[in-house]
Length: 253
Length: 257
Figure 1 (tube, rainbow over the protein chains, first blue to last red):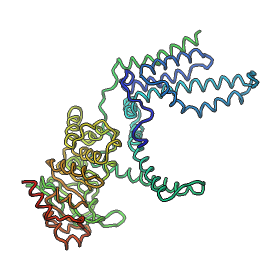
Figure 2 (figure 1 turned 180 degrees about the vertical axis):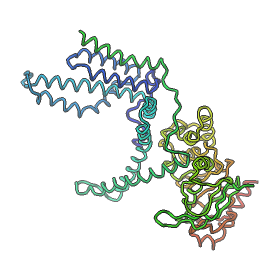
Figure 3 (figure 1 turned 90 degrees about the vertical axis):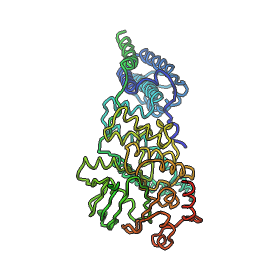
Figure 4 (figure 1 turned 45 degrees about the vertical axis):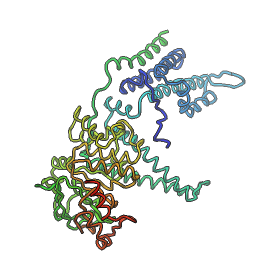
């Protein structure tokens, strides 16, 4: 049944990485990404070191490399921009295979490619080892404003319901011979979007009524606060600390 | 004995002027199971939303266990909402949390229940509807019948005195319909069931009331109401083809004895 059943970014495994509480993993991923981004682009060896760190983590989380790479394809549109940079860049140029390339542009392309890939892979590892529900729980424990986590929680639940609505409406349109081929036939689709919005709006009202009937007064009850242990925080700190170590070593050398 | 529910002279008009209730009087004793029947647009849902103070403002009064529903009195309203559990028609409206267990915990948590007691409430409610094995599942992954049962559990977890069900059998396949009726019959609460499914009313509720045109048009044993063709026709109620309430009542009597 499509969207609802397999969350395409999560990989159900039992690994040490999967078992760590979400807030520690989120913090580690964010800090790691910050270290990667602030590393000067000329220190190629540092980026190699980060890649090794992620490879070790991938193995520890028992995530197949191919699975990860396929999902990393999401960065392709951004990388396309990077490919153009060496041709469009200014300043000093080098000739390679008969192509005149800008040195600055080449560094720029490398910068985007390396940092983008590392960031995407780190996020994918987080998503693969943490369910969407746990991610929200983690954000909540990291004191992310309740409004955001609440909206995201509703989205998590109702995106699938809405997608189902949309799918049923589409099937109903197709069943009545609607087969849009040209732009001017798009009207029924546009009206469908409007109808979907109204349905979502009305559902919102009904959901709210049902919540009020169960004693909702505008504040969600606080979830149980257990959270990550010190050992888990320490384990997660290894990633950003190791990355920072690599960055320092590279810069000093 | 104080009635579980007493409605006197209840009137209500929506802000746009549409009057839906024109003086409803109804009294339900503790432990009774009552079906609320009536054609579309009779005001059934409007009446239900008065029971826990979501709608109010017209003349008349609603009392739950002798306590008047007054939306201005906030602590009282939260107590009323604990006592009156409403299960809405679409379980997707009711189940809004990412997992079944969290959703069942929502009601009692709003009442301030925490920790082990909250867990126990959740377990108890899920066990009552036979859904304990699905506690960590995403509602979207359950069948419609299972979702309806979880929706009942979300309300049971609040340990209500009155359980109000809006069209509990709608969209259920016959097996889910029977499973739900077995669960409902096993609950020790006062039950008010809004339904178009007359055989279901017959099976579950010894007493029925017909709401039509914003008034209680008839009130009596379900079998009597359903076997009065004049009354039924007058309120746009129709039995499914081949269903004979007298025969059904006899079968029900046999099954019980």
